[in-house]
Image (cartoon, rainbow, N blue to C red):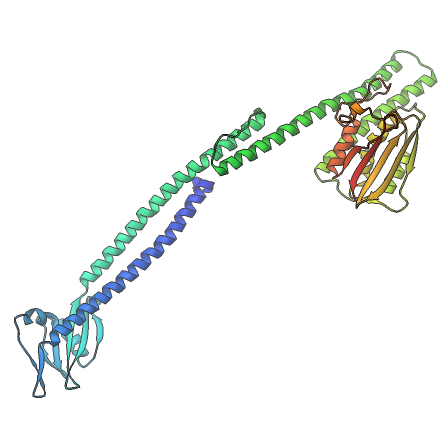
Length: 446
């Protein structure tokens, strides 16, 4: 029974069931039509015999007279001729049918099966001068017809069994051969997905359905390989980004442990440790928020104005030593985004950190509705993004110019864009003249 749980087995069973229903209907129809045809043939023979027997009877002087002829012996074998209720001719040796023949005397055009259906009898009227003079009754054994019906039934059943066996065998083999390439392609795709993501089925000629399946598998493997490469690159860059603040923390701790430091140095060291810990915390929070948004666990509704106010309250420049101020321009009217407010904050936080790192004195954060969506702007008055870096500024690990005196591994903008994409939005760099500062746009669903 295990084989019938597979697609091949189920298709075979369906084909056999369909063939069984069709053959059953054809077998029943054939045997019914054959039985009716045999019955009609038997009735025709009986009418022919009655007509032949009627030619031997003449009307003389008000009575029926049976003429004798050389063929009468053959006719009289199963013939009874009655004048009224009186039998003029009786079939020789057919005493067991005499009662049935007497019962048919006086009846017209009547068929009757007697002796359990072994014999069929027929009664036809004898007329003369416009009136009925008597009755002729003939009989016909039905055993030949019954044997024909039985043989036809057995033959049709045997033929149906052979056809069903043929349908089963042909369907099993045909479906197996048809599904063989599919099974092989599925096995290959699973093996490649685990061990060799660069392998593809390619454009080798195949039947249309298998060609579509091969194209689908190739696309799936492409996406899987791309996703894996992206995750591997992001993991490597994330480890690099976390390594920098972690190294600073370890350095400060080691300095504190190795020698005595003044109270002011100790406060500065602890502040540096706190800043770097907060940086690590923000990176991990952003990644977790992106993972939840990609899994659609963090979709909701957030108050943008409240989110901007919390950002203003918690504002501190990334390095803690640059005299940069934050100007938050919250919308006058309530403004809601189609994502959780915490997600809005985590998208904006890396942009603010980047702006504070490059700004001369001020960073501006604003929000406004636009075409049913929410648009946030993060603008700084720094040197802006160099033209040669505009196409790669969102690539993980690209930190822009390294001679600007600012740290960072270039992961913040990539994380912000990834989280925005996961939330159904985007982060882009607005066009700007060189040296006029950078402006990043955050587009979120309303």
